[in-house]
Image 1 (cartoon, rainbow, N blue to C red):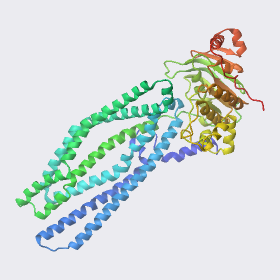
Image 2 (image 1 turned 180 degrees about the vertical axis):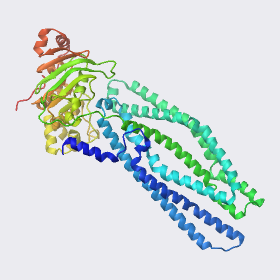
Image 3 (image 1 turned 45 degrees about the horizontal axis):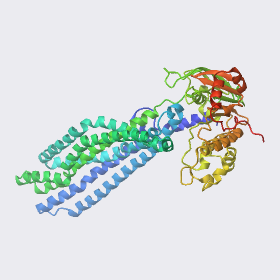
Image 4 (image 1 turned 135 degrees about the horizontal axis):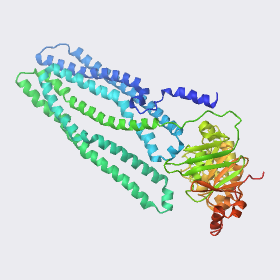
Length: 605
């Protein structure tokens, strides 16, 4: 089966996943069957839960009347109904909890797949804290809709209806009197709290996302914050997010929470009993109610307000869950980056990268690149240099299709990058950015990222090529050391060499290097350049560098300034032209001597 056929097969197999459309009903559709069955089981369980109280009432009435009746039969009915009702409720709620666990897994997998299918630039511009909240917190918040809406809400609702219906049958006057009192308390809760709940909950969600994002970013960037003495600025951003979250939390408690606290106190079983007792006494004393039939108003009546409050509490959680579900559905509705099929081999120009009249802007109204055309010939080293902000990294990201150009064409292997599959494109391009991305896993797993089938021998071969094998062996558990754990701390240059080993294992014909030595000290930089020499052998290399001495031996040097290619040629040719490159070279030569070695070139065997 071809890769394209496999993707089509996977798409058919994924039909059970939540549809990528902004509808909560569609989002929870895979769990709908379990929710319906749960509602049926818990509804029956709720009816059975009232039967013991009815049986006890009839036993009390018979005893007060002096009629022996059938107490054993009634007792047996009460016991059996109580056990059956409890069992059905447990089964019903268990079904929805299992369904929710499966749905949460599917949602998280769907979100991860969506993040992999939408433009990489869109993911790159989304903070890690926002992604974490979306994948972890928001999917967990949907728990209430699936796990409790069908089971608990149905159980509470049916219990209320059946229980209150029985009280109406016993004495409709007393039942309606108590209902009027309880309704007044519930109305108080709605009036005091829910009137502002919508706006507060929306603001609460925004504040929670901001706090999560700033917390994760501060933790992930703690080294840079300390190195550049930016702790005060980072702490200020975190404190602002924390204060905003605390303020909105206070508003919630001050408004809705305070009202709910008052109502919970009024509808506490003891307070309800204090309400039922005088009303029942009044009815019994005046002969309006038989003494035995006052019992269900104490047994069932006290539970009715609690059931109402449980329903109100569920509505509150459901509101939060709906907001989280909406954010999840919106992300799943993101349009995937369009792609074509896997190209048929051979491609027109293997290993070649070409930009033809490319214009692009992160904001289309403000282009970063203006009609850029360039060719990185197969098997050659092409260097992009120039002042910061000129567009060099943007070119690298367009080659890897983080974004699509606003106009013009990016060709890889002679094919339009938009007309081939992303899997094929990224399997042909190994990218090493200056921002190292390692996961909290073993060293071996980090090198084999994306190549889970790689055996230990291939992983070690890649590490040796990246000049990091000996350093790995000095770690506490060698290749099985978890990066970030005790003993698994690596320097910036060592972490960069791990990513080079990953690129070596990928064995792609095109290598894109964006300031691969930016975080390295001079010694690590020399090791990285030796590793790059082995990695570059036989490949097309596009290297972005600020230190010109590191790319002086490149086959072709392109000077990028203001989003345009302003010069092109070899090192000696550009120096002789005495243009922008020569000016940059003289400015760097006037500073401290560059300690780096020459441009990465294939090493001799």
